[in-house]
Amino acid sequence: MSAEPVGAPPTARPDPLALVRTRGYVGLLVKAALLGIPISALAFGFLAIVHELQLLTYADLPKSLGFRATPTWWPVPLMAVAGLLVGAAVRHLPGTCGHRPAEGMKLTGAPTSKELPGIAFAALASLGLGAVLGPEAPLIALGGGLAVWAVRLLKRDMGPDASGAVGAAGSFAAISALLGSPLLGAFLLMEASGLGGAVLGMVLVPGLLASGVGALIFTGLGSWTGLGTYSLKLHHVPKAHLPDIAQFGWAVVFGVVAAVVGEGIRRLALGLQDRVERRTVVGTALMGLVVGVLALVYAEGSGNDASEVLYSGQSALDPLLAGSARYSVGTLLLLLVCKALAYCACLSSFRGGPVFPAMFVGAAGGTALSHLPGLNLTAGFAMGIGAMCVAMLKLPMTSVLLATLLLGTSGLTVMPLVIVSVVVAYVVSLRLAPEPAAVPDGRDAQPAP
Image (cartoon, rainbow, N blue to C red):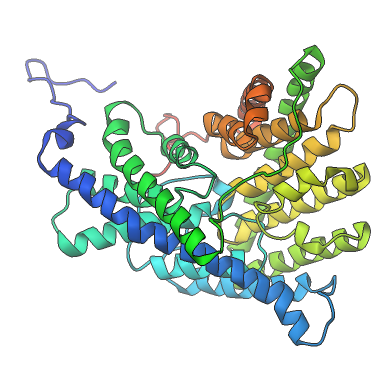
């Protein structure tokens, strides 16, 4: 504790509700609602471009070159090209083209306008060509940066509190429908940013308003264009049984295993990241080759499409659950290993978010374990998602909601099991994580702002 001089007046603490009491806060809410319209439309367009790039590079391009079907080796050169593009962008464009996904969901504020083109290009090259990452992190950065940039064009003297609230509103709008519900996106942003108390209320209200408007825009554009909403959904969820003692035992097992696997993925990704950044372009291309080879190994070993290893896994969750009967345990284990290693390689070098691949790895593991006695498929699927998400993201509330709200009414049935698996995975992963290094004066090291 720092001591104040004797007799000195107490230092006044800033009032986090001061902005709410001003007339400008109503204007801030209006801006948040208005910003939700164009930013959510741009986010929808971004996701549509990613989807079209995936179809163009993985399906249409091989056919135009004379192949009847996409060859199993196709991901190898495809991912090498992706690595070259992303590595060159990270090396030469302003900033780092978005946050490093191996470091988790780190929200450090809205990027500057100069950094936005690099973030968009690196994300499109990563996600559109097959990197095992999700769109949530680029959308959060792009939404926040575009919102702050747009408002500052009209009001250059905007204060830091208002700027933070505007940036948060833009991020809320950008991912409003991506996770299946505006509330899930809100929980993700709140928990990842560490906001609380009165500050949370100040930022949350305009953020929720922008998120609600954004969800309406996503729905409207999806219906108007016929492209859908690009929202996370499961259409065929098997009925879940009421939890029993055996399944609670499995919840503990899921938590421990997910913590060990998640910590292994994270440490390997961080170790690879250090090596990639020594020679960014060559290193990212090599990681792309690794991902392509892993997809080839899975395709040759299982007879299934290599695309099950590529991409975020968001659109593959529904087919995995609905068609679980056609996957043998051996195929599921091969998919799990190849997807986890490809996820690790992409975390170290490409640009995107860590959420959806963590969900898919957990879902594949839970589906494989559901072949064992005493474990229902739906329960295993949900516990795998929740435990792996918290092991990778360190966001327990978001992890529980992702695993349960996704499953609808069955999710409510298995929620107690998911909570147990998430808590166990969270505690064990924190125990497995290395202790923070100490700074020279002996105080605990604090994360960089």
